[in-house]
Amino acid sequence: MRIRILVFSVVAALVVVGLTSAMTVPKLKGTLTTGTIILKKANGTKVKTLKAGKYSFVIKDSATIHNFTLDGPGFEDKVLSGTSFTGTTKPKTLKLKKGSYKYYCTIHPDLKGTFKVK
Ligand SMILES: [Cu+2]
Image 1: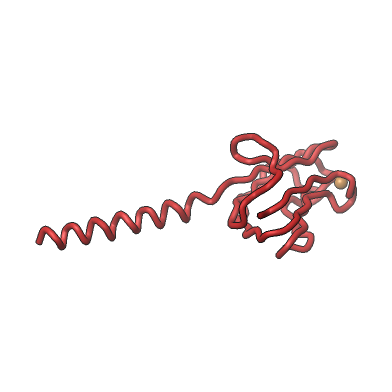
Image 2: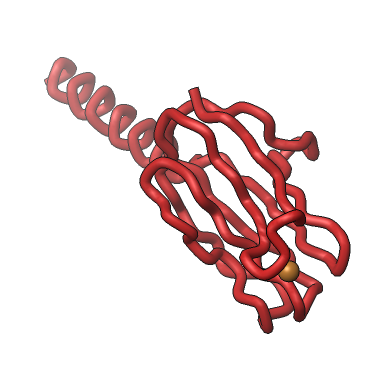
């Protein structure tokens, strides 16, 4: 009986750990204004390198003339915030693979940032 309780506890603990790790997808916050585009980690630092894996993207977009578009392995010009949209996008989970990524406005390609996934 005691072993059965122990086994149940271990299984329950593993389920909790599994659910927790599934829920803790790192958040990345993009900001798009009339003159700036930037992608930051939850701690506020600019994204330069990331480990391969899933990330939850949220874009805070106050510009009606720009879009926030991601280009890189697995994504060819994926629009995360459309040109006319303003506000904060719903979180979108994306799986990033190794390689070089660029986030930019397709209308104004000079408005851009890059990061690497290792
Ligand atoms: Cu633009």
